Image 1 (cartoon, protein in one colour):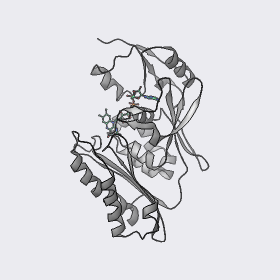
Image 2 (cartoon, protein in one colour):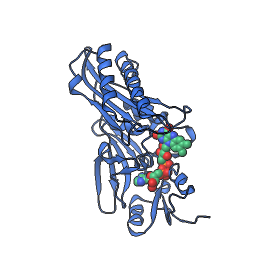
Image 3 (cartoon, protein in one colour):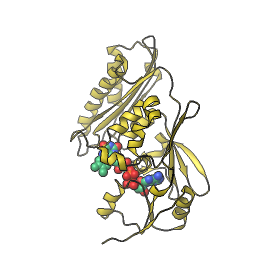
Length: 287
Ligand SMILES: Cc1cc2nc3c(=O)[nH]c(=O)nc-3n(C[C@H](O)[C@H](O)[C@H](O)COP(=O)(O)OP(=O)(O)OC[C@H]3O[C@@H](n4cnc5c(N)ncnc54)[C@H](O)[C@@H]3O)c2cc1C
């Protein structure tokens, strides 16, 4: 039997202090990722710091000036069901809603999802498309990092050993955007994504002002395949959709894994981007 000590801090400050002072410690939130690794013997920490006893660390707040703030301990279900998220960030609510199943979503936290950095995840692509940032806290300071920079590689982030991911920050929504998240699994519908597409189109009078497409789960980190400019000013026609979808296909460099070969995923990206943009352009996307 593996034995470890469990510490249960009551504040972020106390959690940071334990993290800085003790050796061989690991944070635990929902435990949906970490406990699997512990059971497999891949991790045998001496001490686990249970974050779930910290009050208000999963609070979700919104205002028009600053946008959305989601505490790192908010569960995926807290986010998908929060009225402010549903109203102002339906893309995020949608990406959270398709994570696994209700039991996992009720346990899994957004801090754990982002800190674990499994590339086959849903929320990161939507959050990168929304320009989200993460708040990282240690004993002495708080720093804010763009999520796209925080996610460095497979299971690799910019989190320092003594830091906690204390919040997710999403800027206020810009006007005239329609967006959607499409998840594709090669297993059951509750499976992790083989590919996940977050698409956002800002338009006025049928002309594209900005298009943003982020592909998740095919590479170690979400890939921003299209971020405005070259496609802006153009009419939102079928040809325009086809052009963006082809650019997306050319831009990704997928990896082979159990959920599909690189070649399969590259072709899949084109199909999914086409579908996602069609939903945005025809008004089936949110807003
Ligand atoms: C059966 C199953 C199906 C799944 N399907 C999907 C899916 O379809 N889509 C998807 O996106 N995800 C899926 N997941 C992954 C799931 O979303 C993640 O496991 C979950 O979000 C991790 O959060 P947690 O709170 O459980 O993290 P934990 O397991 O508690 O921790 C994970 C890691 O993050 C660290 N950590 C936790 N909180 C913090 C913090 N605040 N600051 C710093 N580090 C922290 C821990 O030390 C650990 O290294 C699935 C998981 C399972 C088990």
